[in-house]
Length: 415
Image (cartoon, rainbow, N blue to C red; front, top):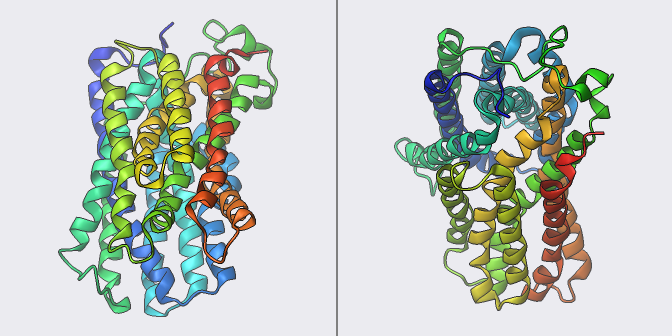
C-alpha cells in the first residue's frame, strides 16, 4: 500500500529536484575533498597510529552522533535538519584550511570529525525523506536517481580542481583555495535549502496521536528496538556498506598482485567499481517499480553480487578483475532498497529508526579493516599474492547471503 503521507505524484517533482540538487552539490564537494584529503594526510607525515585515527574520525561520527541526529530531526524536521547539517559540514571543510596552513594533525582530526557529524545528520535526514516523500514501492527508484546525481558530481570534483591546481604536483600551500570553495558551496547550499520550497513529510503513523494511520505493530511498541525488521535491516546495511567500500579499498592492491608492481597506472582500475554502480543506478531507475518491485530487485542484485564475488574468487586474476565492475553494479540498488524495507511500519519511531540505520555506515570502516587483518593472516610470502586476495574475498559471500535473507524473509519479520 502506498504511503498516504507521501506527496501526490503531481507535487513530487519539485521536492525531488531540490533534493537532487542537494545530492549533486554534496557529491561535488565530496569529490573535491576526497581527492585532497589523502594528499593532506600524506603531507602531514602521519604515523601509522594517526592514520588509523583518521579512519576512526570519519566513521566514529556515525556511531557517536547517530542517535542525537534522530532527536534533532524529530525536534526541527527534515528540512531544517538538512540546513543544520550543511552548516556543520561547511565548518568542517573550513577547518581543513588551518590544518593545512599549520600542518596540524589535531586540527585535521577535528575537521574530519566535524564533517562526519554533519554528514551523519544529513544522511539521517535525506535518506528517510527520499524514502517517504513518495510511494513506498518506488522508494528504491528515487534513491537510484539520487545516486546518479551524486556520482555524476563526484566525478566532476577532480575536474574542477584541475582548473586551479596541478593535480600531479599539489603543494600544501595551494589547497586552501579549493577547501574555501567547498566551504562556500556548502554555505550557499544551506541558504538555498533554508528558502527552498521543500515540504515536510511524515511516514504513515508518525504522529504519536495519529491512531488512525498508525499500524497495529507500531502502536504496540514502546521502543524502536522492538522492531525486528529494523534491527535486521541495520545489520544488512552494515554489511552492505562494508562490501560497497571494500572493492574500492582493495582493487588497486589486487591489480598490482595480478599485473605486478611495474603496472604503469594501477589507479585506472579503480574506475571499474563506480562505473558499474552508475550503470546499476540507471537500471534501478528504469526497472523499479514498473518492471520489478524493489524487493525483487534487491534479491536479483544480491544474487548478482554473489555470482560476481565467486567470479572474483575463482577466475584468473586478469579476467576476475572485471568482476569488480559487476560487484559495483550489484551494490547499486542495495542501499536504496534496504532503507524502505527497514523503516516501513515504524510509525512514530521512523526518525529514530533512520538514525539507527545511519549508525550502520560504520560497516564501511569495520569490514575493510577485517579484510586487511585476514589478508595479513593468510599471506604466505613477503608480498600479498593474488591467491591471498582470492581466499579473503570469501568475505563477500556471507555478507551477501545475509542481505539475501533480509530481502526474502528478514524484512517481513514484524513481531
